[in-house]
Length: 340
Image 1 (cartoon, rainbow, N blue to C red):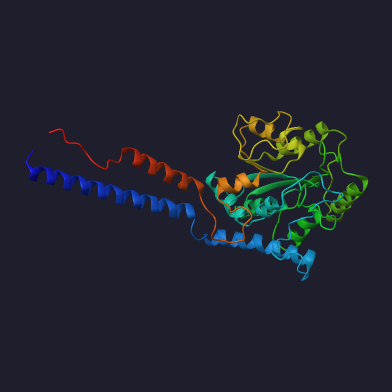
Image 2 (image 1 turned 120 degrees about the vertical axis):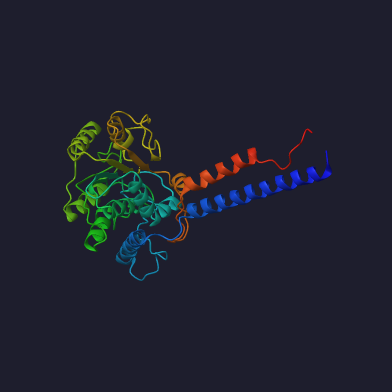
């Protein structure tokens, strides 16, 4: 081969390779910036501030200036009490209270096409009061109609402080103007959601707290009675999305309290005799939150990190960026053999 022809071909190949690498770098940089989320929109920033201010107000109501709550979260309970039901993770409870969840849920509900006037049901235990606050605030920011109900028993570090169970938290949020939504009903929680495993002292604490806030207790002697009453109310409400939080028995069915996280597949493992089973069988989307180490990684919220409005990430652009890189790596050539 004529050396001049070879050198020209080599130079052309090198130019094309450089252009490809530059384009790949630009694409990856753009996807990285998109995954970072950037600054929140004014609406998202206002939502974040609303949740953070609610936390600080609750902290002031519970602890004043005592210094017992240096992060001013307000939503963290105690290690054990008469209204505790199960073990729990303190880092997960702190993560669930991050105001970024309100932004993430706001974006997810908007992505689903939910708009003002659409119906969202939020069913929760008292185990993750921070996430409940975030979910209700996000749905309210979209202008959704909300059906909210809570079982009052809570795992460690949740709403299990006898001096401040969930009804009191909810009342402070409502009276402070941070939430418009009030619970339609409470259940005691515990085993079968009938108060099983909660002693007389704990039952009295929860019953008195519900009565003080004027929220009725949905009571039944059996799990089937509780579930039937809940589903009857859900059928009347007809939600377009169901958000479930924590491990209440009726969410997945007795014995399946921690099955699944995030948006659940239609062929999920929920017992037919459960809230999730009822919703999925009717093609109603369900978002479940209980494993916050998993959810934080999947949805771009820092795990057990200081509060920041700039840490919201979008996981799909990041994953797409990895895919683009590996496809480019597969087809990019560093040299080319000319058979002539």
